[in-house]
Structures are given as structure tokens and as C-alpha cells.
Length: 305
Image 1: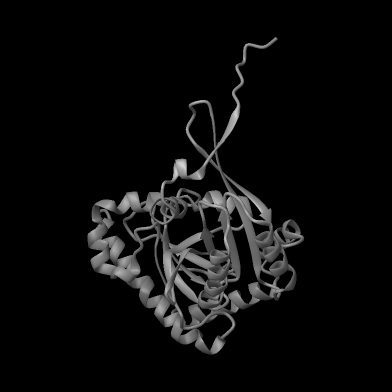
Image 2: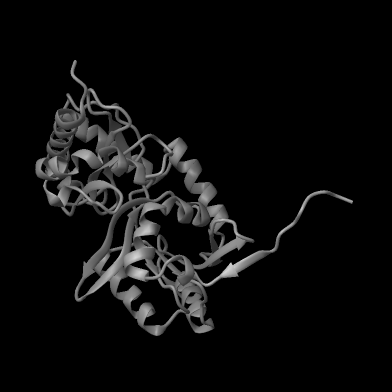
């Protein structure tokens, strides 16, 4: 016998938690993207929501800070349909994404077959996920979201292990390219406050601030700048931390430099690791943006010396 009382786990319709896909679920997922990152095994940095592609809008765009890859996230609150599959293919081309994550409470078999086919027949470097969205609770407990990966690239766990090993050791070809880029950055701007590594980014804390880091990153096809809070904390907290000066930051950085959906940042289309001839222009742009961001955050949020 036991005195413990057990409850029954109950599945709820996702719309009981999020009444509207675009206006409620997408902003929630953007602010809690770490839940999805944990499920698929890829670190995710939010770069935008409702990103325009032709006459459509991609739900969420993120990046992998380990390699700078672009991740497209398309979500539904109903069973999958052909319309979303077609939009995904349009976004994939228009946004130059390397990873696609399709989220829905239920997947029709033809759509799972399409994900499997894409994983088997597209070029190396592309990955496609089907992720089932569940909402559960026990009795009157708070709702709990669950992301279940139902389709993924073959040998995904082994590939993750290899990527983590390469990221730490820097022995991969990508690591070599990143090392060369940061060496070029330092040679062009010797006062840049970092030591060249083979990681995809470096971070600088604006003088006089607490809990804010301005990061410059480089990817395969592009580079940029973003702002995060303390390492490992919920990304939404950075907006809470600056909410009282949001308008001043918007004015200082420009509307294109901030994102109320969960992160500050800009992406440059000047080039990336694969185009060394573009590095000087990209490096100068990143360096200039780094100075602007550091100056803005220090002036607006810095403590007097």
C-alpha cells in the first residue's frame, strides 16, 4: 500500500492552450524556443517571426549558433495539410534554410512520407523534422507542452555527437573556416575585444551593464549580430530587462535592429564563410554594428562609473 495519490495524464487539444496559431502560438513558441531546441537537439537563436517570403510569411526563423545555419520553423494547430507543405518548400528556397521543422498536433501519412523522402534524397547539410505538438495536464495542474519528434534525418543522434565533437575541437573544415574568418577580423580591426577561436560567434558585455551580451556571429552564407542575456536563461528575459527603455533602444538602433518577438539582432546578406572575397565588407559591417550596439546599451542601460 502507498499513501501517494496518482493522477491520469490527459491530452488536450492544442487550441485549448493557444486560441490562435499566428497571434498566440507563434509568439509563445518564439519566446520559449528552448523547448523545441531540446527536443530536436539543435541550439536555436530566434532571428524573426512572420518573415516575409513572396506573398507568404514564414512562422519562425532561427539560427544554429554552432554553425550559423538557418532553421525554418512552420507550425500548425490542426492536422497537416498540403498547403503548409507547399509553403515550406517555398520558404526553404526563399530563405536559404538548411533545417526545416514542421510542427503539428497530427501528421497525415503522405506528409510524413514527404519528410522521409526529403531526408533521404536532398543534399548533405539539409535536415527535415516532423514534430508532434502535445498539450497535457494531470487533473487541474498547469498545461504542459510536449514536443515529440516523429520524423528526423537518419543517424541523427550520431550526427549530433559528431557535430558537438567538431564544435569543441574545431577540427572540422567548418571550424577551420571560422578560425580563418576570426583571424581576418582581428587583423582588420585589432582593437576588437575578442581572441580568435573556431566557434561561430564571440560575445562582448557592454561596459556598465549587467546580464547583457552583444554577440557577433558568422555562418556559412551570412553573418550578423544579436543580443542575449545571461548564458542559458530564457531569451524572453532580455526583453523584460530592457522593457522600460525599449523605445530609446529602438530609436538608437533603428527598428530593423530590434525584435519585440524575443531577441535583438540584425543579419547581413553581404556573404559568409563560403565567400572569402566578401569578408572585408562583412567584417567592417559587423565591427561598425558592434560599436553601435555597445554604445547604445552602455548609454541607455549602463551604470554611472
